[in-house]
Length: 354
Image (cartoon, rainbow, N blue to C red; front, side):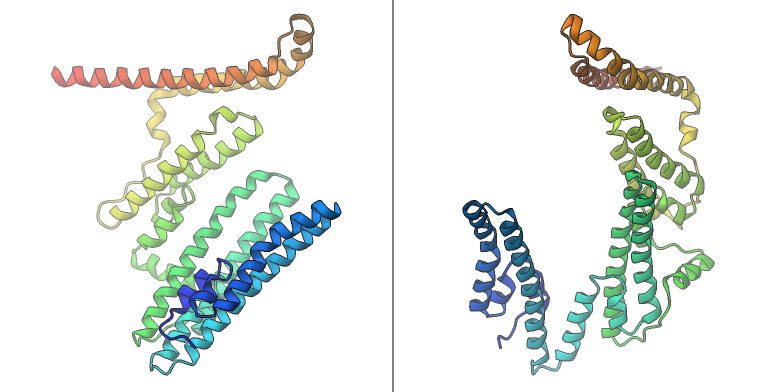
């Protein structure tokens, strides 16, 4: 047994084939696992080239992956044995901490290790239920746009992990843990008028969700609708040139949610909708809608219909013309936006001088 080895570091290093075992002092096993797993790729390639059997390459890769999983499990077991065999008084505590951290990789299992069944079931059911529902709706409707909702899963996972670590630290400090579900915590925060800044930050990863949690209903609904609608409309109308709007909406919603989370309970809450910013600019919104209405039928109906005839008579490929048009439109929009910003800054400067 090798002492003074951190089991958590060993487990993390196990994701590199054999390195975790080498860290624990099992150099021979680590080298064997490393060579076998990494060597499965060139070995399968050689078999495929020699026997002309693609199945041999697939089987070799599959065997290498199986050994990779076995090496991770073997490293975890070896690390846990080293913790259990330690003669230090902190061994039981370190063992529980190790198992809790490892199990917390799956939402809810870390809470089960701590004896919090209700809280663990809430996390596990939420994670699996959301994943199953999103995949089910995506499969039934045949609409890939619903996959965007999978962004909820890392939010649940991160919140589960930090909640497990917080409860583990409380238990190590000698505090009594109450087996309360997440819904009960939310209810207590709601009755007390307090909102969790950490939870609001995590929910802000999905546009509008953090705002809804903080009580900004109109602002949150508009941001969420803008994000989802932009993804759907750009995919349905094949307006790939406007895909840059999606990350802009996401970043605006995320940082706006962070700012409002930090100011919550410190300043009066004002649910100011996003749309109110554009009330005085309805003309530009109308122009944009008309432009989209003209652009879509031209690129998806007119150009494909005329492309064969134009190519036969004029030897011009309209599909390439469509690509050039997309690039030109993006450049024109950027130039117009820049000119508009420069014009606005000059007006403000003149007003300041007056």
